[in-house]
Image 1 (cartoon, rainbow, N blue to C red):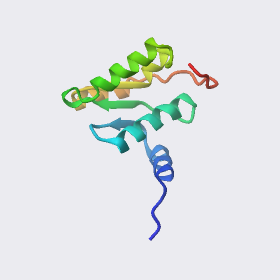
Image 2 (image 1 turned 60 degrees about the horizontal axis):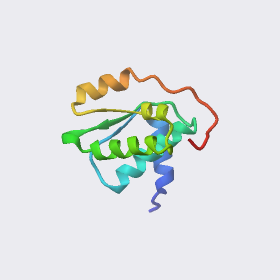
Image 3 (image 1 turned 30 degrees about the vertical axis):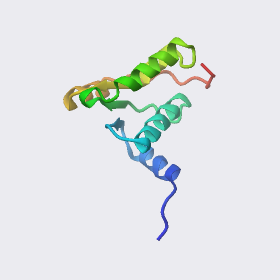
Length: 109
């Protein structure tokens, strides 16, 4: 029995998906979430990325992203790479309305 690599599994997930939704989880969830964001930055996909922010689960992570923007490590326009909602219908609406950022050559900030 061959177990596919984590990267191969994520690549297949990206290939088959129309969007990404992160639900509360641990390291694996964060790995998949940040890889989908990184792939969007690199122009590998232009699919919407949603955070199902149950009971504010992602609030601290979103605050961390805001801190990184304030410190100049993340470009302010890159906050648009994710949408967040605490209700399923609202999240699906936000994903449906998502407009991808124009694909540009990758840069440090």
